[in-house]
Length: 307
Image: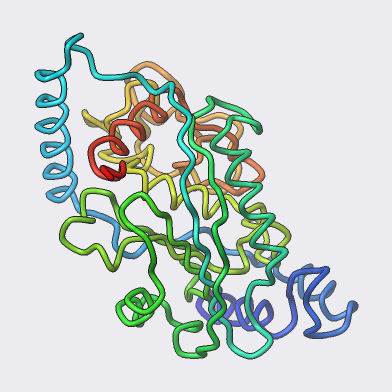
């Protein structure tokens, strides 16, 4: 029954609900009815493809620490630079479409605004120091890529990706089973540079029809992985958690919109409003200063252009 409800929910979104201002699919009344049904039956976020396992996370952390130790040893001050620099990330957005279905350019621009607000601390939390500059939008008509970007990741990215490790490539298609998006990690770039980037569902962009995930924070979350952040619930209550000191550990994801939660015996309530948890968009509004510092460490180690 749950699977059938999910199938009906996704079919409704695909065939009727579009971006309110731009979509021409279906009548206004049909869209309103679809949104009402979607709100009633909207399932929670499912896990992302390509998520690293515990062994990969250990390797990533060990490699980062080795590199940071070398930087500290060669630094005149003996200190690793703090996360105070403002870095502007070049951004290419690749919109995949199937006929009339897909993200309009206006939604892409709203998405960029949402990224800059979230990473700039404009909606709450710390200013991470990262900004995004839209360099271009590509449009590709390919029903196969649109409907299953996970299975078609290799040819899609190899054809469309542009730039080096410092360039963010954001691919916008339609994911299945309510997997909202997924990302590669900076540590992986050296081995698979052509696969580097972030993939999101077009319906999760600001103003999209995906109930509870319609403010563009799926991209904010996935780009956090692209910068090197782990989920706040990584390793549960066990050390080292997500390797960030100012995000208290949490035993499991916090789906939905919990007001408060304290799932681990160590000090601090769960960071349920953090962008790297699994809450609804309306309940996510912050990165921490520690997450900003870790992103800068990752940027300097793996993504900063050496040209």
